[in-house]
Figure 1: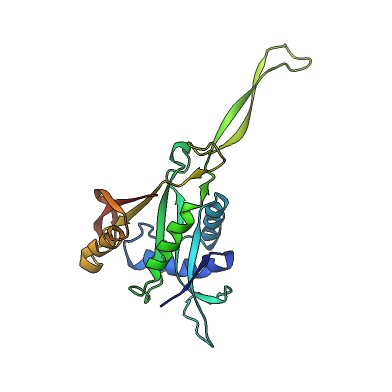
Figure 2: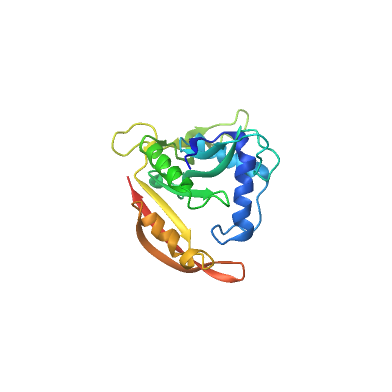
Length: 232
């Protein structure tokens, strides 16, 4: 299978929500237990793309009455077979701006057909040219002011401002991506009790950095996670 890989658009969000809902309800691959509001997906898309980070979909052009999206609201002109994006890693702290976290899902029924591999290849390529517009919100002092007609007691005035990331090497706006984290749940109900997914990442250049035991509880059992890292 050779799906088209392209940047996601807002009209893809209903299908992305449908795919994500399957994993929420039926697996431990996400620790979310209840499907979020539809608006949540649009807001996340706007945040990710507004930061200059890639958000991609794998699309198969639809033919005839082929509608397997399951959401009844497909406006994108094709069936979304999977999606992947890079999101901030501890995004409220500028020192992490060069590190991002990977999310990647294939539509149920389209595993082991190259969808995930093609998405990951395209995402890594997009990451090489991306600059993460991370930011921190802070206050800056405007100095002392006096209230006319008052007791002339000085008041400190401040204003809220947003400080954006610059690259630590070239000093230009936006931090270049140097590290991609894949923090995956070890699914005991998955192939090889979850180890097949770990090997999938390792075979594509990710390095296992450590395992956290019993950090999530879902579907009636405790779940471990493995942290993998891809260095750009």
